[in-house]
Image 1 (tube, rainbow, N blue to C red):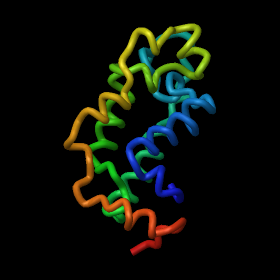
Image 2 (cartoon, rainbow, N blue to C red; image 1 turned 90 degrees about the horizontal axis):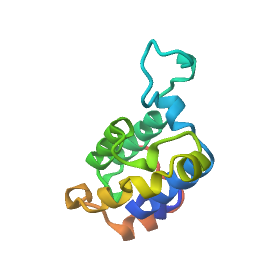
Image 3 (cartoon, helix red, strand yellow; image 1 turned 135 degrees about the horizontal axis):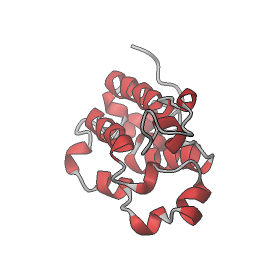
Length: 142
């Protein structure tokens, strides 16, 4: 998030697509999508809220530097809710290959980013692109 572009909605979605989805973050394994607690073959040791922790870090930055982010805390909250809702295919499966080839997710589900972009209440009214870009590479703590 040092680059001001990633503090915009378009940039943040690019960041998540690049650093989590393209690199193969195992959303299915970490979130336990569709796995019952007592089902055979499930490895409870792999459940881990890594992406939720990432969103919490971003949430803290948005609260500390509201002028520098195009999206607000509600945007992050909705994103965190839809990790477990499985309503959108964007954050399902363990790899890009599973999403595209095995499950055909893109053809069968809606895109979460398009949904989030369609809600005007998720835009931060105090966002100032000029201030965000002028801040440079370092967001100094208050």
